[in-house]
Length: 137
Image 1: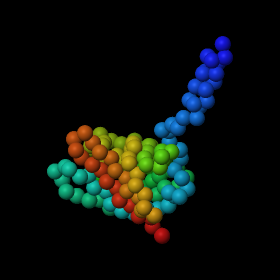
Image 2: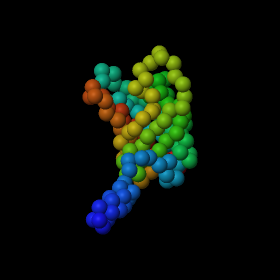
Image 3: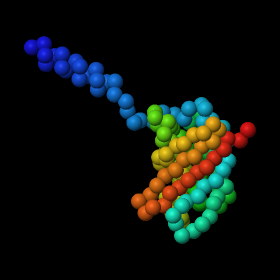
Image 4: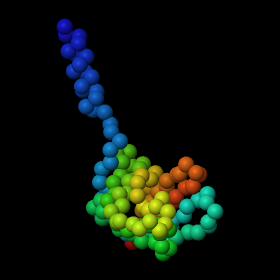
């Protein structure tokens, strides 16, 4: 009789302590104004945009010097518990006159080096988005 109860208690303890892949708000260490570049690799076009992104308490705003490349406006940002993924939720409605895969939205692999951020996302067709940003002092 005690074995099933002991097993059930042990299972509940293990499951309640498991790590999740949920996101938490952007850490305060990411707060700041960033400037850098955006480029989509492995496509026919060869262009690089200058971008700025401001992150403040989990909110972000930004812009690009090339319209819709990428499409940056504003939204919410969070970092995964493993600190290896940053997720942007775009809060701006967009028109249908451009490729929406250029909107800063969704999950990106995050690489941090001191005050620099690099985040990337790959697509099934081989294209790769790369944002290289440095924190402005």
